[in-house]
Image (cartoon, rainbow, N blue to C red):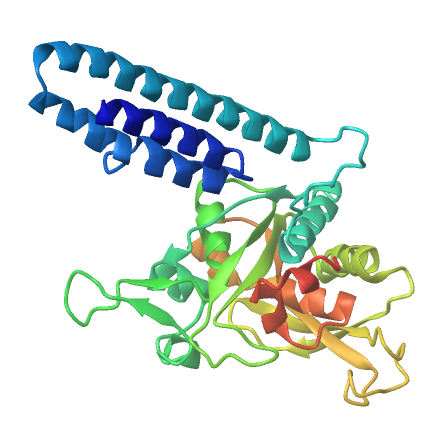
Length: 342
């Protein structure tokens, strides 16, 4: 009868302690202490094996009743606490919602898309080229001789070729290789723009990166002249920077055009009066262009009395001027505070 009393006292004590349980964590502690493998109830059940069959049946039934009573009490308390938590954490549909943060197009991608749209309006089509190129399309076909400084490893990322030490491939240093590639497979008239990444082996600072973006333009046809080039670039600049922008064309040298030109716009900060942005000149260089060199036309298998013009624009350069960004690296730091401004 001693076991009977132990069972009765254990049940009363357990139910009494359950009343003081105030949260789910303490309820779990109560379950382990009361119904776990190391609980007093478990010890009592193990001791039944030492009793006679008659006492074993009598006390076994009482022990099971105690266990079931305590388990029922536990489950009732558990359901009550869960209901309470659910009520406390329930979603109040009358409260104003939190708007999700939506992604947006990166400022550089946005300007590329805008430029391509402007060129489409002028009859150009968008073409894409290889980022991994050969020396032929990057230099030879563009009238860049073997001793030109651009071939030096300080300017170009060379990739290891099949033969050790050979220079079979490189990361394109400009989008110009697509000029010849496109001419090889298409007949005039041609009007294309080629947006994409380019790579230069140079130090990174506020105005230079080892990877940046360009848009290459090419137009081939009969009677194409510098006047056509000027018209196309004037339309582009005015749509990007406003109708009050003025352009300045000055002679410059590029191996793949003849004649070549450097195009500048009147300073967006001082309108040409002279300031720190334009270094007191009133002008800011923005791109290079010119008439396609006859040797480049020959490389592209263009025969006959065709002429053409080409130009190359730095996208980050446009973004910096348009939005007054002083450090090109800001575009790639992934700082959302900066990127959300555009």
